[in-house]
Amino acid sequence: MKKILYVAFLLNLCVQVNAQSVAQKLEETIVQLEADPAFKHAIISLCVVNTTTGEQVFGRQEQTGLAPASTQKLFTSAAAYELLGQQFRFYTRIARDQPVQQGVLNGDLFVVGGGDPTAGSWRWAATKEKAIMDEIISILHKHKIHTIKGNIWIDDHSYTQDPLPGGWIWTDMGNYYGAGCWGINWHENQYDLTLSAGDCCGGLTTVKNISPSIPNLQLINDIRVGKQGSGDNGYIFAAPYSSRAFTSGTIPANEKSFTISGSMPHPGLVFGETLKSKMVQGGIKFSGKVQTASGAYLSGQPLRKPTAVLDSIASPTFDSINYWFLQKSVNLFGEALLKRIAFEKNGNGNTDDGASLLRNFWQERGIEKGAINIMDGSGLSPQNRVTTDALVRVLQFAKGRPWYNSFYYSLPLYNGMKMKSGSIGGSRAFAGYHTAKDGTKYSFAIIINNYNGGSGETVKKIYKVLDVLK
Image 1 (cartoon, rainbow, N blue to C red):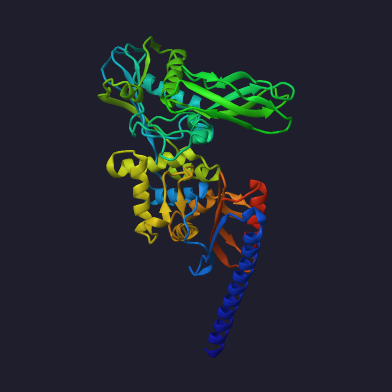
Image 2 (cartoon, rainbow, N blue to C red):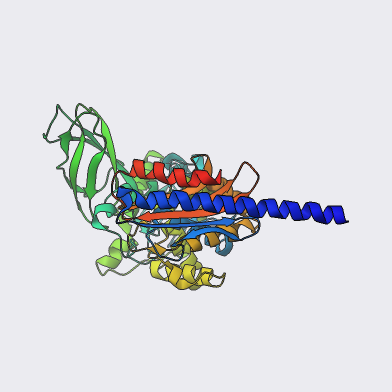
């Protein structure tokens, strides 16, 4: 027994010595980082915890709220596992308002959205445009509908009429990563703008194609030709429901087909027009028009509602959605989840309500509300402020839940470490897990705000800090 106790004492002593050594090395690397001219005016926050014991290994300004960029997605992801469930699905209902008589629907066909952010997405076989359209046409055939006398009514109003969270900026909202969230979402609310560019430099580019086609959109192009190899520096400026979009910036010279991506100003309308075309191709007679609930609401018209549901279309399960949410940092998925959390709780898919519920959820699990001042579900708003301590607490909470393996699997691999990254203007962040060579498991988060210099160089310097945990 004495020998066993002595061995246990030595093992515990080794762990303490190792922790002290890691803490000292982290202190040294952080001091070096703070002395770097690129971080003279920056705020650097780091929190490292022993995942197994929960003890803090190192902390530097870990209680200071900073802009977390996309590492904020961890708050939304982990809460959604608990509040919605790993097998949760979004549903889109196909419905009618009049009886079907001898194959003729004498009223309107309704597509009632439930906020599914995956419809039309290319990330799953079952969500691609053809698969969704084929499923709707199959539902109509199953009910022996071959003629629709009324209109196609796209009910995209299951959430609030404002698709964007407060705090999102003009520079972001017209581009694909700034797409809003409606009751009906389509192609991840993204369209591709293909341009051609001549010889360098300064000349105007030519618009070759917009896919999918955006009804009623007037594009005013001012993207110029930049130096060859200069990369994508083109931006699209547009607001939700707008019929005009403006472009600026540059793309490289001598590009015959260069694509940048924008956010759809009214995805329900794009979905409806696509459905109209596919129905006719599928042998269903239709001569009506496409209407959207959001469009009717904004113009003061009464909203129509169906009387009978024909069938529904299910999204992939949440754990599958979460994989792409974290792997590719799809902002739309975060906003859809936040709104759905609010909808499930109070029947109102409001971003502010969702953010409040998220803060309450984490407060009940030991994170003070002041540590997570959030405006959205994705981290795109520059007004978001969270602490690295709060991020690590989320990681520690996830470690003890039955869905942890799914959560861990969804984290990207950077620098040989499973972690979520984050990047917006002047902010770089990482948060995740790593197991050191000696078997010690760490949960960590690092955020740097207001650095000077290139993002790539900043990331290399952050990796040097995190390498201490290897």
